[in-house]
Length: 376
Image 1 (cartoon, rainbow, N blue to C red):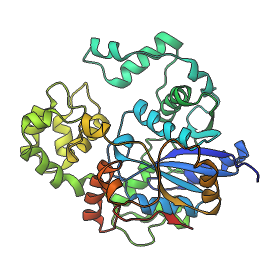
Image 2: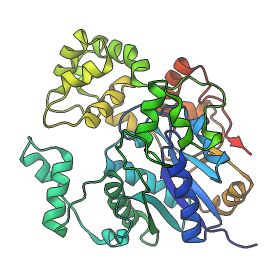
Image 3: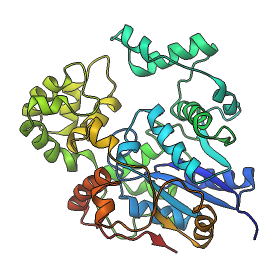
């Protein structure tokens, strides 16, 4: 039997739009791969916000548009700075034995494979000047090592994908694809392909003009409630006001006395954005604060993050995806999970299932316990 070749994609599909469809088709054409495997963030995104639709809805969107296998990137790996996010996602791509990793890029003409050879060690310099943000220190290190600046989010992720590929599998070929028409942070619509941000803003504002930028199968078929931080703010405020200062200090990435600012600002904030605006300082970006809010909401600590063992959780698959899983399962070093039993609920996927329970409370759709993967 012919050995299948897979191209991997790391995505959020928040929601799945025309740009994602273009990337998916182009990735398959460029690599001549037999199937597309996606490692997808679960119910919370890298920027520290809830995905607008839950992971099962977005998995169905992906399968309906040509993805063959969807694997979950759980909350403790998905809600991370770019370097950690990329490392954890590429680790799963490596477990999945993908030959290629394709991603959108603002500079697809760059040879991202050359970044595998770059040795950046800038953590110490980050602590030398507390007034600088992480992106500023990152670019300072790039200037010193490469004479290069990377100021665009997709290019930045591409760099970290290269670093992770070198760590886990230097033979993984990186295949950047040029972003079309819109930039990552654009708030206005383009002609045919618009940014996820502009689409999410339109959904939040209940404007239907975003529909033309989605494949038909991505148009909310079950009239699900879209999710935003406002839906979770009462739970977050409760956690902040009830938790002790000593326990708040133990939350993952709670540094520099931020626990005092969290406690102080939560009391008078009426909305999530009021709270973030009050906590934010020059050193920390909005994204950094939003991620920290996720860690607080689910009481994430270094210890309980480290206790979540790696696994491949299947969210959805079609026939060729199942054939590929049979091909790789004997060489896969971690468990492959297609249904969440009590053991997975309480161990490997403890934090993910904890977060899923809250999503279920907000949108009414079952997320984890005894949930099977989608099969088409």
